[in-house]
Amino acid sequence: MALADQGGQGTGRPAPGPTRRQIYEAEVRRRSNLIAAGSTLTVLILLIVLIPMAPGWEGVKKSFFNAEVFARTFPGLLEAFLLDVAIFAWSAPLIFILGLLIALCRDVRKPALYPLRLFGILYTDIFRGIPVILVIYLVGFGVPGLGLPRPWNSPYIWGTVALVLTYAAYVAEVFRTGIESIHQSQRSAAASLGLSSSDTMRFVILPQAIRRVVPANMNLFIALQKDVALLSFIGPVEIFRQAGVYKSLLANFTPYVGAALIFLAITIPATRYADYLLAKQSKARS
Image (tube, rainbow, N blue to C red; front, side):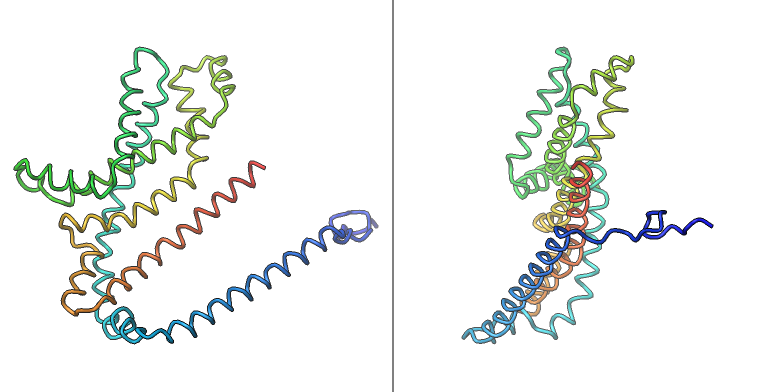
Protein backbone atom coordinates (compact mmCIF):
# COMPACT_ATOMS: atom_id res chain seq x y z
CA MET A 1 0.00 0.00 0.00
CA ALA A 2 1.32 3.41 -0.93
CA LEU A 3 2.17 5.77 1.84
CA ALA A 4 -0.43 8.49 2.49
CA ASP A 5 0.41 11.99 1.37
CA GLN A 6 1.52 13.81 4.50
CA GLY A 7 2.57 17.45 4.62
CA GLY A 8 2.01 17.79 0.89
CA GLN A 9 5.05 15.61 0.14
CA GLY A 10 3.56 12.27 -0.94
CA THR A 11 6.83 10.51 0.04
CA GLY A 12 6.10 9.67 3.66
CA ARG A 13 8.63 12.24 4.88
CA PRO A 14 7.44 15.02 7.21
CA ALA A 15 7.03 18.51 5.79
CA PRO A 16 10.09 20.73 6.31
CA GLY A 17 9.80 23.13 9.26
CA PRO A 18 10.24 26.89 9.07
CA THR A 19 13.67 28.18 8.20
CA ARG A 20 15.79 30.30 10.53
CA ARG A 21 14.95 33.34 8.42
CA GLN A 22 11.20 32.71 8.73
CA ILE A 23 11.49 32.22 12.50
CA TYR A 24 13.50 35.44 12.81
CA GLU A 25 11.01 37.44 10.71
CA ALA A 26 8.07 36.08 12.73
CA GLU A 27 9.82 37.11 15.95
CA VAL A 28 10.52 40.60 14.57
CA ARG A 29 6.86 41.00 13.56
CA ARG A 30 5.67 39.83 16.98
CA ARG A 31 8.02 42.24 18.75
CA SER A 32 7.02 45.13 16.47
CA ASN A 33 3.32 44.47 17.08
CA LEU A 34 3.85 44.44 20.85
CA ILE A 35 5.80 47.71 20.75
CA ALA A 36 3.16 49.35 18.52
CA ALA A 37 0.32 48.20 20.79
CA GLY A 38 2.17 49.37 23.90
CA SER A 39 2.98 52.81 22.52
CA THR A 40 -0.58 53.29 21.26
CA LEU A 41 -2.02 52.30 24.63
CA THR A 42 0.35 54.70 26.39
CA VAL A 43 -0.71 57.61 24.19
CA LEU A 44 -4.42 56.83 24.74
CA ILE A 45 -3.94 56.68 28.51
CA LEU A 46 -2.10 60.01 28.47
CA LEU A 47 -4.89 61.62 26.45
CA ILE A 48 -7.58 60.23 28.75
CA VAL A 49 -5.72 61.49 31.81
CA LEU A 50 -4.41 64.83 30.57
CA ILE A 51 -7.33 66.24 28.56
CA PRO A 52 -9.79 66.32 31.51
CA MET A 53 -7.13 68.19 33.50
CA ALA A 54 -7.32 71.18 31.12
CA PRO A 55 -9.00 74.21 32.76
CA GLY A 56 -11.72 74.56 30.09
CA TRP A 57 -12.55 70.87 29.74
CA GLU A 58 -15.93 71.10 31.47
CA GLY A 59 -17.08 73.83 29.10
CA VAL A 60 -15.86 71.92 26.05
CA LYS A 61 -17.50 68.73 27.28
CA LYS A 62 -20.81 70.51 27.76
CA SER A 63 -20.67 72.22 24.34
CA PHE A 64 -19.31 69.37 22.18
CA PHE A 65 -19.94 66.10 24.02
CA ASN A 66 -23.38 66.57 25.55
CA ALA A 67 -24.99 63.14 25.75
CA GLU A 68 -28.54 64.51 26.04
CA VAL A 69 -28.17 66.73 22.96
CA PHE A 70 -26.53 63.86 21.06
CA ALA A 71 -29.45 61.52 21.80
CA ARG A 72 -32.00 64.17 20.71
CA THR A 73 -30.32 65.12 17.45
CA PHE A 74 -28.68 61.94 16.17
CA PRO A 75 -31.84 60.42 14.57
CA GLY A 76 -32.47 63.66 12.67
CA LEU A 77 -28.86 63.71 11.50
CA LEU A 78 -29.16 60.15 10.21
CA GLU A 79 -32.30 61.11 8.29
CA ALA A 80 -30.55 64.14 6.77
CA PHE A 81 -27.57 61.97 5.85
CA LEU A 82 -29.82 60.01 3.49
CA LEU A 83 -29.83 63.09 1.27
CA ASP A 84 -26.01 63.04 1.22
CA VAL A 85 -26.15 59.39 0.18
CA ALA A 86 -28.71 60.13 -2.54
CA ILE A 87 -26.66 63.01 -4.00
CA PHE A 88 -23.55 60.81 -3.94
CA ALA A 89 -25.44 57.92 -5.57
CA TRP A 90 -26.55 59.94 -8.59
CA SER A 91 -23.32 61.97 -8.84
CA ALA A 92 -20.81 59.07 -8.82
CA PRO A 93 -21.92 57.39 -12.10
CA LEU A 94 -22.02 60.76 -13.88
CA ILE A 95 -18.52 61.57 -12.62
CA PHE A 96 -17.24 58.18 -13.76
CA ILE A 97 -18.68 58.57 -17.27
CA LEU A 98 -17.62 62.20 -17.76
CA GLY A 99 -14.16 61.56 -16.30
CA LEU A 100 -13.63 58.63 -18.65
CA LEU A 101 -14.73 60.69 -21.66
CA ILE A 102 -12.37 63.53 -20.72
CA ALA A 103 -9.51 61.03 -20.31
CA LEU A 104 -10.25 59.60 -23.77
CA CYS A 105 -10.23 63.12 -25.21
CA ARG A 106 -6.78 63.68 -23.72
CA ASP A 107 -5.55 60.42 -25.24
CA VAL A 108 -6.61 61.37 -28.78
CA ARG A 109 -3.59 61.07 -31.10
CA LYS A 110 -4.95 61.96 -34.53
CA PRO A 111 -4.02 65.53 -35.57
CA ALA A 112 -7.52 66.19 -36.93
CA LEU A 113 -8.99 65.51 -33.47
CA TYR A 114 -6.56 67.78 -31.62
CA PRO A 115 -9.43 70.13 -30.56
CA LEU A 116 -10.76 67.27 -28.41
CA ARG A 117 -7.35 66.84 -26.80
CA LEU A 118 -7.13 70.59 -26.19
CA PHE A 119 -10.61 70.55 -24.64
CA GLY A 120 -9.57 67.77 -22.27
CA ILE A 121 -6.44 69.66 -21.23
CA LEU A 122 -8.33 72.92 -20.62
CA TYR A 123 -11.13 71.14 -18.76
CA THR A 124 -8.83 69.39 -16.30
CA ASP A 125 -6.68 72.51 -15.80
CA ILE A 126 -9.69 74.73 -15.09
CA PHE A 127 -11.71 72.48 -12.81
CA ARG A 128 -8.72 71.18 -10.88
CA GLY A 129 -7.53 74.74 -10.41
CA ILE A 130 -10.77 76.15 -8.94
CA PRO A 131 -11.72 75.15 -5.36
CA VAL A 132 -14.80 72.96 -5.30
CA ILE A 133 -16.67 75.35 -2.98
CA LEU A 134 -16.13 78.17 -5.49
CA VAL A 135 -17.48 76.03 -8.34
CA ILE A 136 -20.52 75.23 -6.18
CA TYR A 137 -21.15 78.93 -5.55
CA LEU A 138 -20.67 79.92 -9.20
CA VAL A 139 -22.88 77.17 -10.60
CA GLY A 140 -25.34 76.91 -7.70
CA PHE A 141 -26.14 80.63 -7.61
CA GLY A 142 -25.20 81.66 -11.16
CA VAL A 143 -27.33 79.28 -13.23
CA PRO A 144 -30.57 79.68 -11.19
CA GLY A 145 -29.98 83.44 -11.49
CA LEU A 146 -30.85 83.11 -15.17
CA GLY A 147 -34.50 82.86 -14.14
CA LEU A 148 -35.06 79.25 -15.15
CA PRO A 149 -38.49 77.74 -14.33
CA ARG A 150 -38.95 74.99 -11.76
CA PRO A 151 -37.46 72.43 -11.32
CA TRP A 152 -34.49 73.67 -13.38
CA ASN A 153 -33.60 76.30 -10.76
CA SER A 154 -33.20 73.67 -8.03
CA PRO A 155 -30.00 73.84 -5.93
CA TYR A 156 -30.03 70.03 -5.84
CA ILE A 157 -29.59 69.90 -9.63
CA TRP A 158 -26.96 72.60 -9.96
CA GLY A 159 -25.12 71.57 -6.81
CA THR A 160 -24.82 68.09 -8.29
CA VAL A 161 -23.62 69.59 -11.58
CA ALA A 162 -20.90 71.51 -9.71
CA LEU A 163 -19.67 68.35 -7.98
CA VAL A 164 -19.73 66.38 -11.22
CA LEU A 165 -17.78 69.05 -13.12
CA THR A 166 -15.11 69.27 -10.43
CA TYR A 167 -14.62 65.62 -9.60
CA ALA A 168 -14.74 64.52 -13.24
CA ALA A 169 -11.53 66.52 -13.79
CA TYR A 170 -9.74 64.56 -11.04
CA VAL A 171 -11.15 61.22 -12.16
CA ALA A 172 -10.11 62.00 -15.74
CA GLU A 173 -6.52 62.50 -14.64
CA VAL A 174 -6.59 59.20 -12.75
CA PHE A 175 -7.93 57.42 -15.84
CA ARG A 176 -5.32 59.11 -18.01
CA THR A 177 -2.60 57.87 -15.68
CA GLY A 178 -3.99 54.35 -15.96
CA ILE A 179 -4.18 54.55 -19.75
CA GLU A 180 -0.61 55.82 -20.04
CA SER A 181 0.62 53.06 -17.72
CA ILE A 182 -0.23 50.45 -20.37
CA HIS A 183 2.92 49.77 -22.37
CA GLN A 184 3.02 50.93 -25.98
CA SER A 185 3.83 47.39 -27.06
CA GLN A 186 0.22 46.40 -26.35
CA ARG A 187 -1.06 48.99 -28.80
CA SER A 188 1.44 47.75 -31.36
CA ALA A 189 0.40 44.12 -30.79
CA ALA A 190 -3.27 45.04 -31.17
CA ALA A 191 -2.53 46.92 -34.40
CA SER A 192 -0.64 43.90 -35.75
CA LEU A 193 -3.75 41.82 -35.14
CA GLY A 194 -5.80 44.23 -37.24
CA LEU A 195 -7.60 46.06 -34.43
CA SER A 196 -8.52 49.68 -35.05
CA SER A 197 -7.50 52.42 -32.62
CA SER A 198 -10.98 52.50 -31.09
CA ASP A 199 -11.12 48.72 -30.70
CA THR A 200 -7.64 48.71 -29.18
CA MET A 201 -8.74 51.28 -26.61
CA ARG A 202 -12.02 49.47 -25.92
CA PHE A 203 -10.83 45.86 -25.71
CA VAL A 204 -7.14 46.11 -24.76
CA ILE A 205 -6.25 49.37 -23.01
CA LEU A 206 -9.33 50.37 -21.03
CA PRO A 207 -10.00 47.03 -19.27
CA GLN A 208 -6.45 47.04 -17.88
CA ALA A 209 -6.35 50.76 -17.14
CA ILE A 210 -9.65 50.77 -15.25
CA ARG A 211 -8.54 47.87 -13.05
CA ARG A 212 -5.28 49.64 -12.24
CA VAL A 213 -6.94 52.89 -11.11
CA VAL A 214 -9.73 51.42 -8.97
CA PRO A 215 -7.97 52.18 -5.63
CA ALA A 216 -7.19 55.78 -6.63
CA ASN A 217 -10.75 56.37 -7.79
CA MET A 218 -12.07 54.83 -4.58
CA ASN A 219 -10.20 57.50 -2.63
CA LEU A 220 -11.69 60.22 -4.84
CA PHE A 221 -15.21 58.91 -4.29
CA ILE A 222 -14.59 58.85 -0.55
CA ALA A 223 -13.65 62.53 -0.79
CA LEU A 224 -16.81 63.13 -2.86
CA GLN A 225 -18.97 61.64 -0.09
CA LYS A 226 -17.55 64.25 2.31
CA ASP A 227 -17.75 67.16 -0.13
CA VAL A 228 -21.47 66.59 -0.68
CA ALA A 229 -21.80 68.49 2.61
CA LEU A 230 -20.58 71.63 0.84
CA LEU A 231 -23.89 71.81 -1.04
CA SER A 232 -25.44 73.03 2.19
CA PHE A 233 -24.06 76.49 1.35
CA ILE A 234 -26.50 76.83 -1.55
CA GLY A 235 -29.61 75.44 0.14
CA PRO A 236 -30.00 71.63 0.44
CA VAL A 237 -30.71 70.56 4.01
CA GLU A 238 -28.28 67.65 4.22
CA ILE A 239 -26.45 66.47 7.33
CA PHE A 240 -24.08 69.45 7.71
CA ARG A 241 -26.88 72.00 7.36
CA GLN A 242 -29.12 69.97 9.68
CA ALA A 243 -26.36 69.95 12.29
CA GLY A 244 -26.17 73.73 11.94
CA VAL A 245 -29.92 74.01 12.49
CA TYR A 246 -29.68 71.93 15.67
CA LYS A 247 -26.70 73.99 16.84
CA SER A 248 -28.71 77.20 16.48
CA LEU A 249 -31.79 75.75 18.19
CA LEU A 250 -29.95 74.16 21.13
CA ALA A 251 -26.93 76.50 21.38
CA ASN A 252 -24.68 73.45 21.39
CA PHE A 253 -22.03 72.06 19.02
CA THR A 254 -22.66 68.38 19.80
CA PRO A 255 -24.68 67.86 16.57
CA TYR A 256 -21.51 68.59 14.60
CA VAL A 257 -19.75 65.82 16.52
CA GLY A 258 -22.65 63.48 15.69
CA ALA A 259 -22.35 64.40 12.00
CA ALA A 260 -18.61 63.72 12.12
CA LEU A 261 -19.22 60.26 13.62
CA ILE A 262 -21.69 59.40 10.85
CA PHE A 263 -19.17 60.40 8.19
CA LEU A 264 -16.46 58.37 9.92
CA ALA A 265 -18.70 55.31 10.03
CA ILE A 266 -18.90 55.46 6.23
CA THR A 267 -15.48 56.72 5.21
CA ILE A 268 -13.21 54.62 7.44
CA PRO A 269 -14.42 51.22 6.12
CA ALA A 270 -14.30 52.58 2.56
CA THR A 271 -10.76 53.87 3.11
CA ARG A 272 -9.60 50.56 4.53
CA TYR A 273 -11.14 48.78 1.54
CA ALA A 274 -9.30 51.12 -0.84
CA ASP A 275 -6.05 50.37 1.01
CA TYR A 276 -6.77 46.64 0.74
CA LEU A 277 -7.29 46.95 -3.02
CA LEU A 278 -4.08 48.94 -3.37
CA ALA A 279 -2.08 46.39 -1.36
CA LYS A 280 -3.61 43.52 -3.35
CA GLN A 281 -2.74 45.29 -6.59
CA SER A 282 0.84 45.94 -5.48
CA LYS A 283 1.26 42.32 -4.41
CA ALA A 284 -0.06 41.09 -7.76
CA ARG A 285 2.41 43.29 -9.66
CA SER A 286 5.37 42.20 -7.56
